[in-house]
Length: 342
Image 1 (cartoon, rainbow, N blue to C red):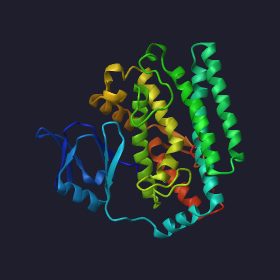
Image 2 (cartoon, helix red, strand yellow):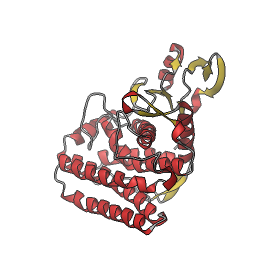
Image 3 (cartoon, rainbow, N blue to C red):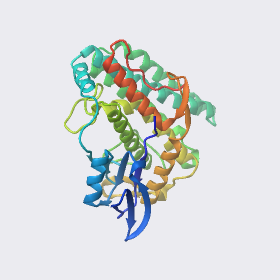
């Protein structure tokens, strides 16, 4: 199994062109980077990045996904070649969508994975807290999430499940401020989760990281032969990658952890964000590059997968989970098991 090799282009005004079997990145006609196409599985462009038509054709021919995001990391479009994958698997996936019990059980597993991983973030924060008051507050929130987990089996509908997940998310985000280094709390103060647009620096950073995890989850599902739009937890809407959103839920806390690391190590500061009209906040171009580099480095971290009982790079875990999702779709005796490290 190979690590997904994704090229992230954050340079404003960059121009991407085909140069024989290589993707060339230019800025003001100066070559900044060359990448052999056979090394790539996806190209992700942030903001105003141009591409030549020959390159777009070649990416489609080679099965290399091209993803366009705006400056904030919000999804705009995706270009792919002819659809591949396993048609029988996709047929089974749509049959599962009509199975209310399977849909609810799989959605419940996705929520459980997210809540368990969020709880680990709070528990770790409580252990490392500098004051007893903060440790107690974080421990209480972790207990609240444990209560949410206990409530999941009783949720008898998708709406009920989404309600439990929403309340758990509200409690979780209310505690993230306590995980920020005290001298950075004023700069990265967060009043709950905001998006479209993010209203503070912390939310802007989270939105950017979520967008990258989302892209990896979608690519992993496609690699497994599943339709990323046919999800179980998230409602089906035209153009919405509902299954990718389902799979991403268990990885959101990993984005949160990286955001906290970048803030607490002082790798991002107030000048790394731009305040825009209307109250929107976005990462500055140089900060986007730093976050992308940190994200790529974090994906190289070796982590123990409890189900496989072996270590593997974090960046490969979405591929493993996508295959577990495919197994669940095929085999009713093998329900989906989210990734929750010990």
